[in-house]
View 1: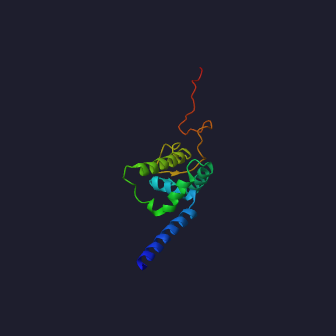
View 2 (view 1 turned 60 degrees about the horizontal axis):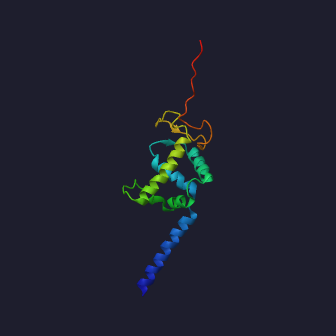
View 3 (view 1 turned 90 degrees about the vertical axis):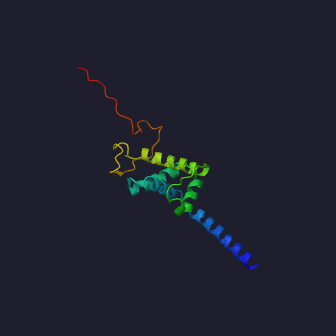
Length: 146
């Protein structure tokens, strides 16, 4: 009987700890974890990363519950890449790819020729509906009339 009570109280403690971690997690911290995990080879401007995290959170592009879950599991998430090929891992990678794509399009990374030696600076939140927001756009060069 004592062992059962001990196990039940330990289980209740773990559930309480998990609930507390989830309740105290925040979305911008999760976005920052994704950026630092997947773009570890780049020099990221810390102030720009924080501003991007706030902007992405304000847009509500990615589910807040998923982001809070990533922040809640914290150290487990930042472990080396998962090698399994299943629905959960594929879903996590898809979400990471969305965040990384939005971040890189919102910075000067492509405007500087994708140079990994330079510090990546956040410019503004990338919105494909804003004219000339495409970092790959080049000005039209008209032939000069002679």
